[in-house]
Image (cartoon, rainbow over all chains, first blue to last red; front, side):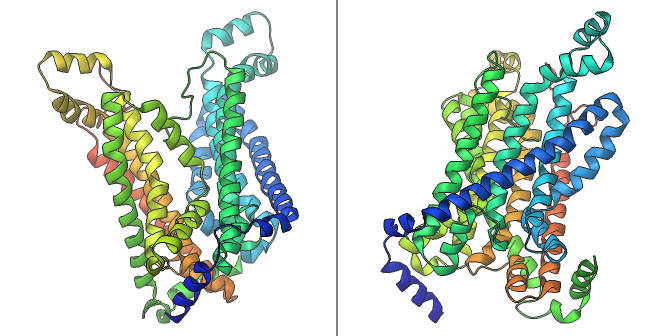
Length: 233
Length: 236
C-alpha cells in the first residue's frame, strides 16, 4: 500500500478548507447548483405529469392499481447506482441517463401519494358535489384535487428530497450537481471540494425539505406538526 | 439492448467466477459490508426507537433529526465519513471502515422512525389495560408493545437493508470491495460488459434482499395479525 501512505501524506499537509479554492470556483458552484436544481426539478415535474393521470385513472378504475403499482415497483427496486450504469451504454453520458431513474422513482412516490390523496376524499363529500350537479370532471378538479393537494405535496416533498440525493450519485458520469465536488475530492484526495460538495448537497436537501414542509403547512394549517412523512412503508 | 446481453455473457463466463476478483468473492464482500452495517444500524436504532416510543421522551427532536438524516445524500455521508477517517484514523481510511460507518448511518433514520412509530401507534387504552393487569413498564414493552410494533420495525429493517445493499456499491469509490468494483472499474476501463454485469448483480442482490426481508417480516409477525387480512390493525 505505497499509494496509501502517499495519499495520507497528501491529506496531512492539506488544510481542511482552502477558502481561496472556493472563491476561485464560485462559477462552478453556481453551474453545479443549477444543474442539481434543474435535474431534480425537471425529473419530479415529469414524474408528476405521468403519475397524476395514472393516479386519477387508478382511483376511477380500481383494478388498474395492482398492475400499475407492480410495474413501477419493479423499477423502484433497481438501485440508482445500478440503474445509471445499466442505462449508460444505451443513453451515454447524457442527461437522460440520470433523468430516467429519477423520473421512475418520482412516479412511484407521486402515484402512491396522489392516489392516497384522492382516496382520502370522503364519499359523502363526493356525493354532495354530484348532488349539486357537478360533472365528473368538475368533481375531480373542484373537489377531489383540492382536497388531495396536501397529500400530493407530501409526496412531492419526498420525491424532491430523494431526487436531490440521487443526483449526487450521477457525479460518476459528470451530471452530479454538487455531488461533482464530492467526487472530485475523493478522486484527487483534496478535502476542500469534498467538504464543499458535502455541505452544499446536504444544505440543498434540507432547504428543499424545509421549504416543502412550509408549503405543506401553508396549505394544511390544521395539520399537526410531525406531518405525513413519519412512516415509510 | 445488446449491451445487456453482453453483461449476461460476462456473468456466464467461468473466468469471471474465480480468483480474488471473482463474482463469489465480490458478492461475499458486498454482503459482508452490508450485513455489518445493518447490524450496527439495528443495534443503535432499535433500542433508541423503543426507548423513545415507550417513554415518549425526546420524540420530537429525534424524529426531526431522523427526518433530516434521511434527506442527506448517501454520497455526502460517504464523503464526510471518509474525510473524517482520513483526518483521524488515516491507516483505516481506505477500504471497509468508512463505508461501513456511512452505510450504518444511512440505515439508522428509517429503522429509528419505524420503531418509534410502531411503539407509538400501539393503542393507549391497551397499554393502560396491561398496566392495570399489573404489568411493569418492561413487561408492557416486551409483551405488548414490541409484538404489536414488530410489523413496522420489520418494515424499517427491510427498507434499511435494501438501501444499504443498494448503496454498498459506492464503497468502490474509496478503494473498497464489493460489487461496485465491477461497475467502477468497468466504467473507468471502458469495459461495458463488466460494468453492466456489476449493475445487474447489484440490482439482483437488492431485489433478493427485499424478498428475504419481506419473508422474515412474515415469519416475525405476531400471531394476532398473521393470517387475518388487513394485518397491522390492532385489536383494541
